[in-house]
Length: 193
Image (cartoon, rainbow, N blue to C red; front, side, top):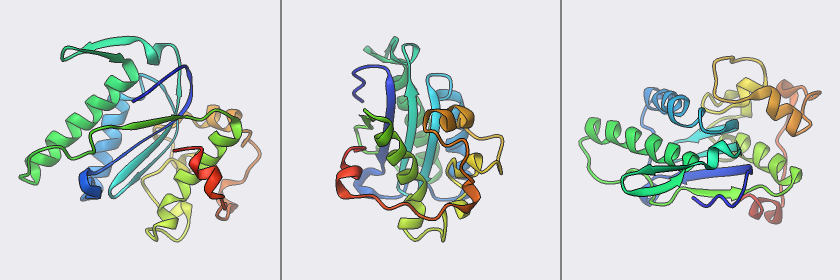
């Protein structure tokens, strides 16, 4: 992952060959638990969405997130180390249970600096609408594996720093329970990938 500076980033990866990475509700829940252990202490998670074959995070990367950590002979930012640990530990569990070997995820987890508030807002709505666009849910509220219910006030034990996200994105007065889908241009989507 490439982190040039502190800021808001869209971080994402998918299964090798676009194959599934989550096979049951327990897998999604285990991944969230690993995120609490390996990611939440290295950055501020503003939003997230887990899909059957990929994941998205919108995070606030600060100076502590960029502190160099030595791991396996490599030196990398703490946030990169967190995502490596997350994916490595998750892969070990899935490989053992599914009697498979090799990498579950594509080799390079990607990160994109969201250079403006507009890009951050696009990323926020894009990742929450992902399950609807993929026909996995009728609306954003139906999908269990995203931060949307946290923003609706329907789940309090999630990963996201909801109040910080609302403040940063100027979302404090929005009624999240009454939001239809938001449309984006290809140019807007290109800015978050």
